[in-house]
Length: 220
Length: 228
Ligand SMILES: [Zn+2]
Image 1 (cartoon, rainbow over the protein chains, first blue to last red):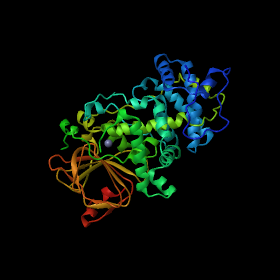
Image 2 (tube, rainbow over the protein chains, first blue to last red):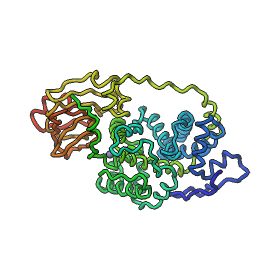
Image 3 (cartoon, helix red, strand yellow):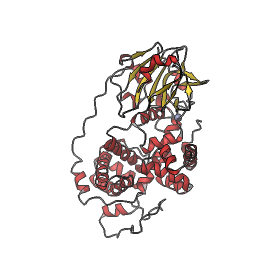
């Protein structure tokens, strides 16, 4: 069930990180080995369908250390990053029925939960979320609201596209997601004109769109 | 009054947030008010919604490839022990009438305590009415603003930023039309004077993140509205 190879990361991994021994318990395996989106979807669906604690344990083993690592990379104290990881995984359990593999990969869905937990913890407000039901009533192209964004289904296409981004574009995405910096703050820090940062973001998004063609919409 | 004719909603949206703002939305960098404007726009704009989905997928990739940090030995057990805790009840949503549910995008409905017609509208001069919204953030003002048919907001520029999202009706500004779903962001380099449609007026979500700088003497009359 589990993929045995980690896909190559788009930034260097610490040298001590190795694949675990097959003798280790399953949750440790899960934590160290790559899981495909398909694997993760099955775990999510087992949680949603029958409150499967074993599936949740595997999902926790995979995501909790990554969510904590993501928080630390965002500058959060380790103890708070662990609290966010626990709260986020608890929210994953509670919201499991709302996960829909046709709309997003598990990692994407978990990301939005983690982002909202960060904001809830540090800024004490809810983060307004896009209402995906709304387009059914107001869409100008009459497409069904649950149209699959096939691009989002498999994280590997996204990671591949990111590996192919020019370094100057990837750097800006990393500063946005890891350092919580706005385009204005990034421009200040890098000593670049705001227009240059904006155009790099525009180019990066165009490349992501090209790599994930199902979602192309010409609305400019 | 505000036009709620559904046919108006099929006019394609012409003015979208810059991709840099969509990135800031996805990464969680925006303040609550601007995030609300973006969430509302993307709830009625498929192109921007897809762009945000792709950006969220970038965030997902950053998490799934993040260097793992070991969690405590008891972390899983502590969460397992909480799985059966009762879920905190969702706040009771107030009843909103049909006009409100048609005009106000879902993310904004959650900030309304009552329907549009019964909000505590405050008249400002002869052209405007506003109803402030309860959002976090000091120095940021968030309000629903109605401009009466054919009326204008006094010419002004900004010390900070002004964000508007048209919810119903429309306005003209510097020769451009803005209607339902159109998003605009103005900084200190812009001086503008929006004029509402003659036939239906305009309802907007407006966010000001610093006091406006008034250009004309008339502006002083509506200064209370413009002051954050
Ligand atoms: Zn848009």
